Length: 72
Image (tube, rainbow, N blue to C red):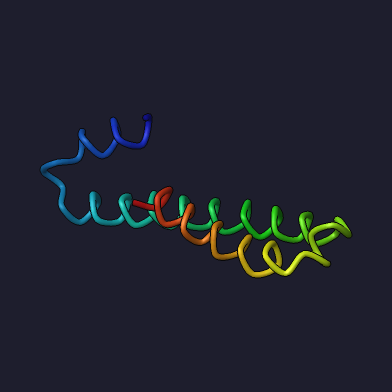
């Protein structure tokens, strides 16, 4: 919310707006990627997830699908 307010104040300064928007999007992508990678690593430490073929292949695909909604 704070980032959107800050971006709204910089409507006239296009160069600064593009710079801050890039940082905002980059931080969001990095946050989503790091949280999902940690979640996958923890999930595969649980033995029940490693032996179930539906979870082995479905969990990463579901998380990628979910991450695309978070990034949109």
